[in-house]
Amino acid sequence: MDEITNVRNILFSRLEELEDKRLILKSPELRGLYNKISSLPSEKRGEFGKKINELKNELEQRISSDSYDGHSKKPIDVTAPFDENIEPDLRPGLLSSERGSAHPLSTELDKILGIFQKMGFEVVLSRQLDDDYHMFESLNFPKGHPARDDYDTFVTDEGLLPPAQTSTMQNRVLRSKKHLLKEGEPFGVVIPGRVFRNEDTDARHEHTFHQIEGLYVGENITVGNLLATFKEFLSEYFGKEVDVRVNPFYFPFVEPGFEFALSCPFCEKQGCKICSYEGWIELMGCGLVHPEVLKMADIDEKKYSGFAWGFGLERLVMMKHNIEDIRHFFSGNLDFLKQFGSGK
Ligand SMILES: [Zn+2]
Image (cartoon, rainbow, N blue to C red; front, side, top):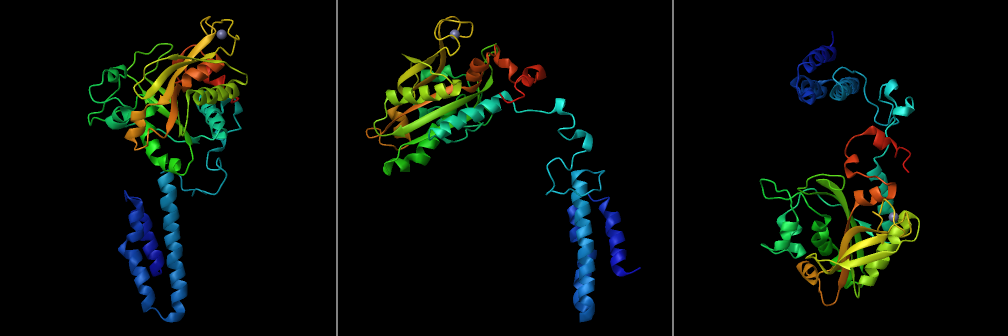
């Protein structure tokens, strides 16, 4: 038996016992073979080296197939079509009635972000754990501010907060984009994110849901700009003209602040079940960015102004598809989810 075959047998039997199988590539036996190359007569070095490399490749292939599946010795072809490595019975298409589909919230989120992107907004993602500064202070809720109590947030042992709203991203976005203002460019972003509230759940309330924040800053930005922008979005999303209505409302990070309603897209303000026979549907809070919030991001609040909104993704999707209970979304109920299978 030649030396390489001998080492091969040793290494393959040891491989079975090793927890971290990659260690086999650093074994003294393998290194010994490489070291031996230089002591061979020059005409034999090439073939010897080639055989060691073959052994090493063989070992690597075994390691990668073992790490995929302890029972399978078949190497994975990472360049193959995506379903090539799946057992034939499980391949999508063979059992088309059981094929999965995008969750309705994902489908609708894509549509919504697509509309805002066409309108010139950039998409920035929110985060699922944040701190007191971004959740409160930077949004003009100083420590001890009574409005903090309106946000019944969760807190981790370390004092971090799963965000109760996507506005926690405002300070970061303002800081990272403010250089554009100096160049005379306004900027707009939409920020989708998961938010968390210490909430008793019912048909209208979930402890975990999604918001989409909008933030636009430039010179001479007015409430008129806010309303025109959001009206344009809603008309595109519902595929028909909607009217909008605002009532004054207090949020610490906007001035003036509003509660925003749209005319019911299903009954043309005549009143129907979806709008509780009011003709209008409350959708979100919005307003002009509070000067203190701009100052917190070192933006000159006398020169620049902006608008912001935060609306609930679930609420908008429920309205569009006449879904009566927000808890359906995370219920895992396939009868509910299958209604959206075609991605409508
Ligand atoms: Zn209606």
